[in-house]
Image (tube, rainbow, N blue to C red; front, top):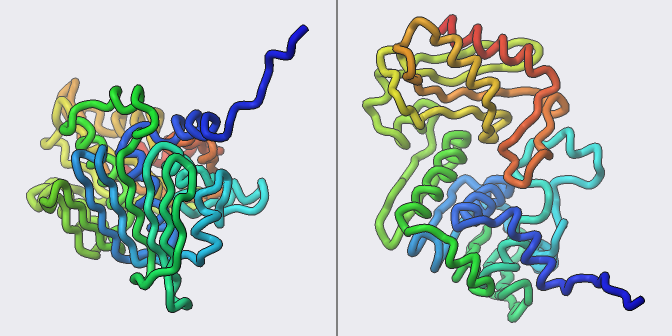
Length: 325
């Protein structure tokens, strides 16, 4: 019998793997901005053209990379965040799998300029479809400048499935908001087709919320602040009279990471019971700070699905803290 099982070429395997991580331009923005944050950046600029189809550029003033690290960063499972399996339960960084840059490079044309503070010259790398086309030393600013062009240029079918520019830009803004709300100590700017969309100065959490969603929201927010041995719950919730039938300003964050959690959303809903009209929802911006070994974020490539070791106890804590506020 003729053998029928064969290994996929690297180019095909890389595109398949990239499909889990990079689904649309917003995925590129998320991964590059999270990388910038993990590098210790305090100033992050995002430049978008054509809702990310043509260009996603992220410039930061973080640590930067040496020439060897810059090249290795585009290899799959190359990461500085973890070294052994046990590290998965002590994660405080945004990224850790070492898949993001490799996935982006597999489906786009990527240019990187990067320099650590300790070196006089930086590194310039050009990659297209996982293939390094050019590498040289250059003069450049400290930090990293990622330029991602023509997303899915080598997968026409994926490119055709992208939605309208308005829809893709909306996805980018959602990802942007989820990140910037966690890091008020970092300056962010976002430009689309040459127009400034956001310019967010460094401040406190409440200031960042108001800069993102408008200053008039400030008079409608109530602070939440509860500390226990299990988890600290802080943030802001909307006044009952501001409840709406469709409220998109509902955010949970754990250890500076956005998360989806229907169970904890129910806890908030129960806390508002009999305080708001049936069928309406209140806004909330709730930040959890918990020991990393009490949660598992290694559930899904997007890292938005997070398991808690003692969800019922956290549920009660959320419900009580919101109700008391």
